[in-house]
Length: 252
Image (cartoon, rainbow, N blue to C red; front, side, top):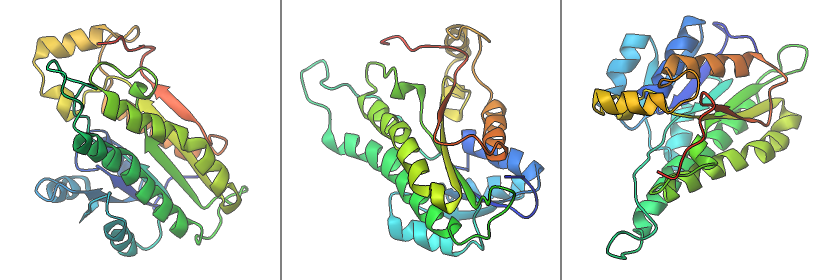
């Protein structure tokens, strides 16, 4: 799919981090972008700065997602970046089991939120006019994590949710193939998102040094660059791509 002014994209979690970086890159390519985010305080400011639209939406609420998508003319690109990563062990030091409400919250936002937006976007993409030699109607990109493969201590909820995002990539791509919609996922490693950027500088340096090459934290612009490549490469379908500098996470 060629990027340009005739394309419309939605980006969940677009008010910060990887989502905002993707928005910036797509807008540079002329794409019309709408940020979908719960952050009603910073979201509109980020949208104004980038030249995007903003809709406050809870991705775990199917009705809210549907209402948001109804406000957009025609979506060709869906980028899911919304997610949370609270740390909690299966049992804590005192032997108390993991809070099931917290586990459910992580699954609802990271997995069900991705599912809600992807499926509802796909239902609308299926009505788009086919474009190009392959008759493509849309591209969906979800965000997994390398924790899907090497979840660390305290990441049972996060790793479970991201593992499921990775696992649904291929069946979703197969389901939507007849509609001309491609589905891929990216599993990023250690990136300089707001959560990581808030850590002390020496901690950030240590995290980056653990990456084989290049020995640094990933730049959100590099994530955005891969997103653009996936959109433009018509044979890229049904795949979860690690973007991690060859790191493999240790237990902690």
